[in-house]
Length: 64
Image 1 (cartoon, rainbow, N blue to C red):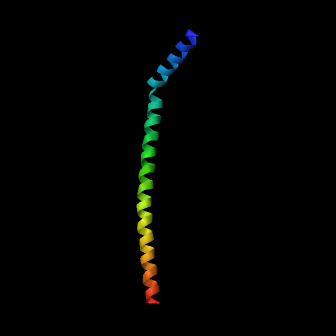
Image 2: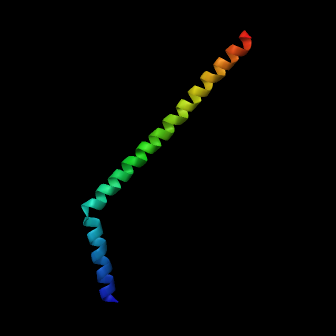
Image 3: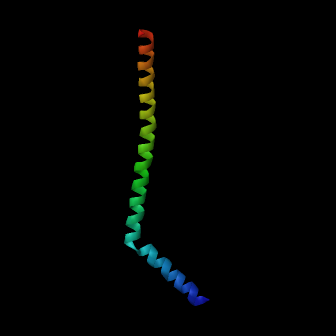
């Protein structure tokens, strides 16, 4: 049982010291931040586009 815990401890230490894993986590965080920013900006853009189309539609309706 003690050898199993020792192996688990050594595996955990190796994982924490592995720089490749840290780079992967950093890239994942950057991608998540970009995705969040894109989603927020798309919502604002969608609102502006909807307002523009409504304005054009109203102008066309009153002109006809």
